[in-house]
Amino acid sequence: MAGNSAESGRSVTSKVTAILTAFTDGSMHSLTEIARLTGLPISTAHRLASELAAWHVLERTEDGLYRVGLPLRMIGGHAGNSHSLWERAPYVLEDLSSATRRDVRLGVLQNLAVTYIEKLAGHRPVSSLSDGAVLPAHATAVGKALLAFCPPRVVDTLIAQGLKPFTPYTLTTPERLRRGLAVTRLARVAVSRWELELGKSAVATPVFGPGGVVIAALEVRVSDLRSDFQVIRPALSVAARSLSRELACESGNRWPLPAMSTNFALHGGRNGGSAPVA
Image (cartoon, rainbow, N blue to C red):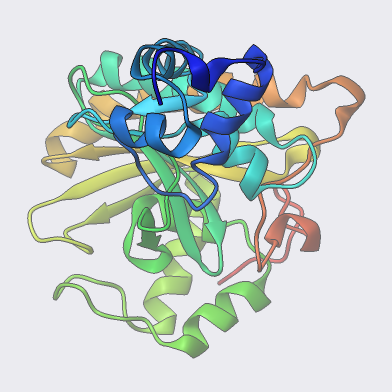
């Protein structure tokens, strides 16, 4: 195709739509591939893709590929207007990571596991949701912060599936897990010491939405629970309270929850409102 004949008669909207349609299968594309798939000149593809990336509709990876950005992932992955949590979460993670200089996560419970986004310490951007961003709920602080506010039947289902040991420190007996969740419910803070990976620990606290519903949890990874806990907990608590306060102020007091196959928030997972897990 010579010159700009590929662009003849095409509006800006049609060009942008063509670019976004190229990502419907969830793949990543180079600039050359975007131009080929859309029939746009490289210069036009570069200009529009760069603008879409500036608005976070697309994301550019470290190796120069483009992929769907967080806003579109959330539109595709969750029904209704559940964008509020995911719009605010990246900013909270940026601030929390900057304040603590640690890796931080925000997770929700989905299919009895934790789906999450994270911000690694340093200058890397907040990650996007992906099929690979899944953690076991029983072996992580973020997971236990969520499970602690589930109704008993959710925890029962998780236990029935088996508590997989990842290290010698993983909680693999129902009694130990239930006891730990009861403590988390009272303290509003969960910890994991070497339970998922040897030498790695974390502290997490729940995030509440309107009506006291636990909708997510924030986690900070630490090197040593004994020395880091008292330093990390204040910043973590402030971040969780701040995010909870923003979500509680949603207009109409209606909160569309993240999609969960086991949606504990719809079955009594409220702040102090569900039966104890112990």
